[in-house]
Image (cartoon, rainbow, N blue to C red; front, top):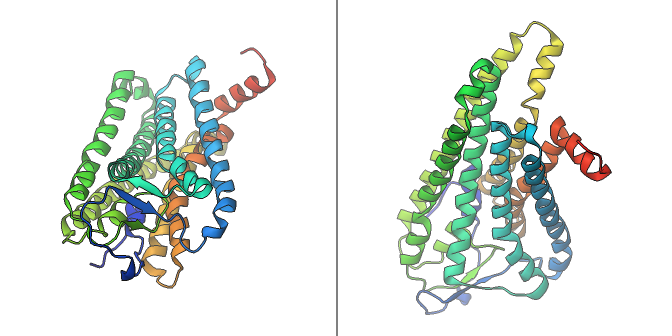
Amino acid sequence: MQETPFCLSVGHFLPFTMSDSNSTDFINPSTFILLGIPGLEAAHVWISIPFCTMYAITILGNFTILFIIKTELSLHEPMYYFLCMLAVTDLVLSTSILPKMLSIFWFYSREINFSACLTQMYFIHCFSVIESGILVAMAFDRYVAICDPLRHSTTLTNPVVAKIGLAMVLRGIMLILPHPFLARRWPYCRTNIIPNTYCEHIAVVKLACADISVSSYYSLSVAFFVTVLDVLFIAVSYTQILRAIFRLPTKDARLKTFGTCGSHLCVILAFYIPHLFAALTQQFGYNVPLHLHVLMANVYLLVPPVINPIIYGAKTQQIRVRLLQLFTHQET
């Protein structure tokens, strides 16, 4: 069936172009075969270099953010608690994809167990939804801090922050939970070859020799529900924030106040723009080669975890100062 990709699930709709000659007569295979990046097999080792570098930066950057926030008492505030949640989410999301990808590139380890494939698929989509929810929570924090600053400390108490974080995690868990269960119930009797570097939901269920309408419509509904509601909430929050900023009496006050949410705005753009660009490529890029689709599906998941700690490290003064102190061994 023809599907329309949508933002968080743009990777769901990678075209399947394997020939029918690859078809076999098996049901519920014990393993799937991940091709990596079709058409660029000869360059896999070279392609692995930037991806490995990205993973190293992701690990180092996000663990550094977590360490700084944990050890710096002045950063024990709602904004930085949400940033810790974002860092953990980025670490899990990257680790769900990159180790297997690098094993394909370096060791030609293309096989992945059926259950492991479904587990990877679940973690990727679950933590993508969680990350979007955390960005909403951070937008709410900025809204309260700027539009109602006198109530910020009483509104966003530690228990409230914990409940918001738990709600975002439970939302991701519950919304994505049907994906692996639906994928497991389909019979697979065509091929076990996935033209990608990871097990993506629709790329997996499209291999089934059954009517997958339930999986397809549910996947699209989740993507629509998550993306539209989250982007709408963020847009409303920042509309109110901008109105409050423009009512400030001086230009310096406006710039200073806007600077407090500048890093969050950059993170939002870094998360949603690649998704939107990939969605447009999938929707209108009919002549785009398969390897470009696969590269885009990897980039839009792997870029935000790399640049999020860089953005917050560069734009947040408290984190930047503490980071310099770590490198220069100065006392606080």
